[in-house]
Length: 424
Image (cartoon, rainbow, N blue to C red; front, side, top):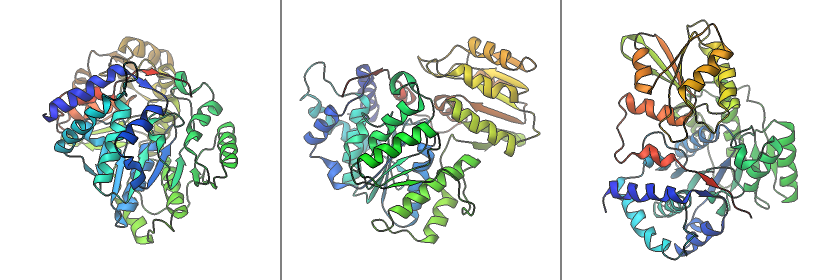
């Protein structure tokens, strides 16, 4: 099997959608010898900031000398981004080997019960991190928490970043309902740390923690004396405070020095989130994967505080199943010019629809609909400052366009899925 063939096999698993439930994940892990039992996890859920919080935690523990595993989603360009050890992407040969090892296990499932893409790659991650003898695994949920495939582990700590409206069609249409899904990662007696401030959501997390006798640490405010952090934006200070609270809670199991904390915060890297790129001729491109209203409000605050007074040109694309009218309401009033584009996804919102919503939200802006991101970037080639936002998929496409090593086999397509909720 070649790497391209392994990716094609994983791509084929998208046909099975994304079913929420743990039975198949537990069964897969059992068939593989339960590799999760040989690992220590920090399990991270939440609406926004999961990836950034994971990156901060990983950077701190790696600076402290711990061998780290990092499991996140979606990937921006290459599937290999999802599985990292000491921030090194999994090798193509290891992807091939893991796919080959797991394929026979899939034959144990009857028709109609085939494991999904995310269930399979979750097992790949468990097997890989165990084989690599990772000492701590930073473990991000895929969607929700309670019925997410990652929830078959018992972690050292459960971390919930925040709760906002996103994926309402699967997780619920209120903060409290969504919080109930995220709080599903809370385990009996296992400490839980949260930065959630929304009152109804926090009430659910508090109640769940009390019911499961899980010690709860709340840190809904950034630290006033936070060490220097490489990640841009005030919201990252909140994510860093959450990570530091987690490190403090786990100090007995995973000792970390003050120097390691400073080094970790000063060297953390997390692409696609307020990522400022410097192009030829002094031009700047800001990439941010804001894809829900809360995320876009965070981007708005960062633009107003960090880039105030500059002419703002935006390239904007979104998925149809997101609250894109709300995204337009938040983003459009800031911009002098808006270029709407399709996202490279079957689920893309139409650029013409996005353009109409942006014009309604800011009639004075110049709004242009494009047939591709490349067309929009070309139209902005003389602009000194351009923001690309609305979807992590779009950010990944921009990184590819800018010359980041192109992934063979259409790897950004592996982010595509359609959910089939199940009971349990």
